[in-house]
Image 1 (spheres, chains in turn brown, purple, orange):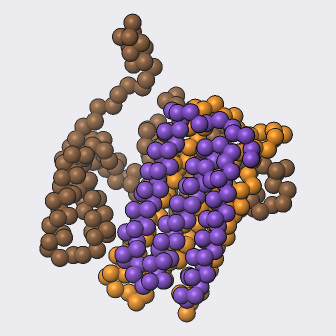
Image 2 (cartoon, one colour):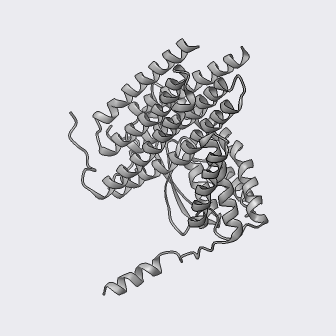
Image 3 (spheres, one colour):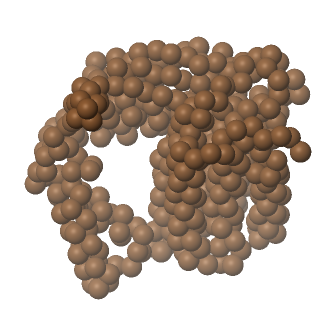
Length: 183
Length: 94
Length: 109
């Protein structure tokens, strides 16, 4: 009986991904960890750098599969640069909608202006990383919060007024698709 | 410039006191968590300002970073805790 | 002198966002709507204020002050990574407890 329930659950869940560790993932994790160590410690004598090398090697040995799921290819670098090019546009967008929410906060007749609604749509982004980036970008933009994403790629978004929610998914999805190479 | 930072820090302290209203008068547990989260974010900035006032920014930054981490973990843990336990209901207004 | 002016402007704009976040936290009808000002406006306020403060302590330019500026930017990156996760955790708890979002015309909570 319990076994049936477990099998039922297994059918409903998305298939498990096989995580592979590869040499390039170890090296990339080590470089990132070492950079964070240098920034956090701020001392560049031999003793502190040696401790950093030791700690970074330990971390990258145990958890190299957390950051990169497979060997680094040209696609990884293209995705990184695409993401870095996407961040300034996201910041500009956050500033614009922050001004709108600020206007709502200080408006004397705010209760008549806001109209919270839940928008539902299905995205066409395929990879997990692109969907996570999309959901977090929606949440970071003031006025919209991603409340639920299932593995059919259905997004439920809570928007505070029609102005914030009407242009979803729109421009943001197109830019993320371009950044992650899913045109 | 130090006077400006002092006034700024006091203003942020006043804003934190205002957010405390949401923590005390709910009306639900989740409202209180939102209030605590808002206070914690402001505390990070306040710690860096205190560091600038004491001319020891390099020391206070580590405290601020640890506080940001701790605030994030506290909100995450309490949200997950109250999701499973009782307490998520509308209490009578005071 | 120009640096001081830029720093003051950045700090004051950040303070405006902080004030808006607090006012919205007090005024909005239910906690789904309160998350919008509390989580997001505070995030952009932190970005502006820490940008200003790191610019202020960068001069005179030494290795130590550059590292301190990088650390400050690390706080911003962390806040921008953590705040959507925290927001999502709170919303998820509310949804699983069966709380309906406030709609137009509902009583004030």
